[in-house]
Amino acid sequence: MKSLLLEVYRRPLGRASLFVLIALYLGALFAGFLATQPVNSQDLAHTYHPPTPIVWHDGGLAVPDYRVVDKSGPRYERTGEYHRLRLLAPGFEYRLLGLLPLQRHLVQPVDPSAKVYLLGSDSTGRCVFSRLVYGSRVSLLIGLVGITITLFLGLLVGGLSGYFGGRIDFFAMRGVEFLMAIPSLYLLLALRSVLAPRFNSDQMFVVIVIILSLIGWAGAARVLRGMSLSLRRRQFVLAAESMGQSPLRILRLHILPNLASYLLVAATLSIPGYILGEAALSFLGLGIAEPASSWGLMLSQAQNIKIFMLNFWWLLTPGVAMFVTVIAFNLLGDVLRDIVDPRMKTQ
Image 1 (cartoon, rainbow, N blue to C red):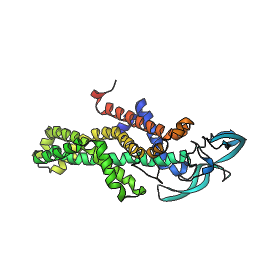
Image 2: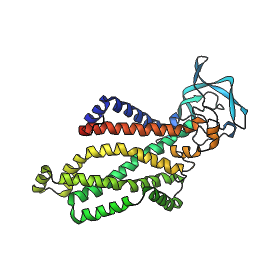
Image 3: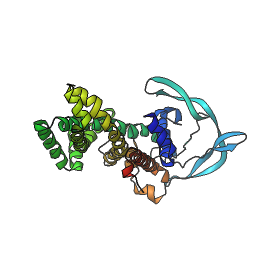
Image 4: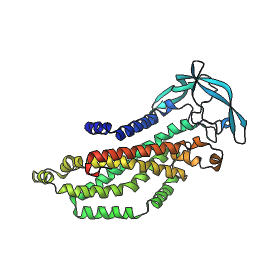
């Protein structure tokens, strides 16, 4: 694994994608530290507030003050005054990793009544930047958890059916084919509709992960089954069987290590699908719900013609974050594929 990471780091695209993904996941991990306001703090006097740039003023960091000049828009203009900022200053309380209560933030205004909107505010005056970093927890974590469950189920069903063959292989593959024959979109909507009334908004994260995993594992199982069938006839596996090793030991020591490279590449290339799947559900109003936050939910709340007519572009930043994340994962997956199997190298 260490040599693989070094090989990825040596390649420009691999290094760039790693830096982007590390920054995104660190941002999600320390969302409370980076946020300038509580995630659901509303201020109806500052709806659709434009982004407030951080500038150098009177020997320190500051943000310009704004006032409303047209409430129908609304439209803002600078007053000429500035609010000083402090680094690593106390602010609202949050829990690091959901456990450790803290109050220190990366940046906070000296005046507690001042508002800092690094990426503007939404229709209820909530800070878009704060919701963006908090929403990244759901959107990024759902990919990792979902692909872990998917590959585990795929490895369990595909690996065992490919190794043992016979009736196990027949019934397992027929079940996989039946699942793959169902259109994924309709299955997704049906599962969500059945499970939705039984869970509140805080539990919907687990529901979305389960739904996406149930849909995605069948394809992985078919690929892993084919690879297991190929490995089953290799000489080192036959030698292990002739020495009397148990099937579980052969699977653990001989089959699984030879599938590890595929699992790593498949995971990297499949995670964007889970991120986009959650975004699609939330965009349709079937995913993460208030008061939680996710990139898909934020995009769903931004589908207002007023946002496009009045150029409130900052409300579309979750889409930019999603685009950057998907591109980074795809680039990393391509680099890993080129390293693991040079014959598949992209031109």
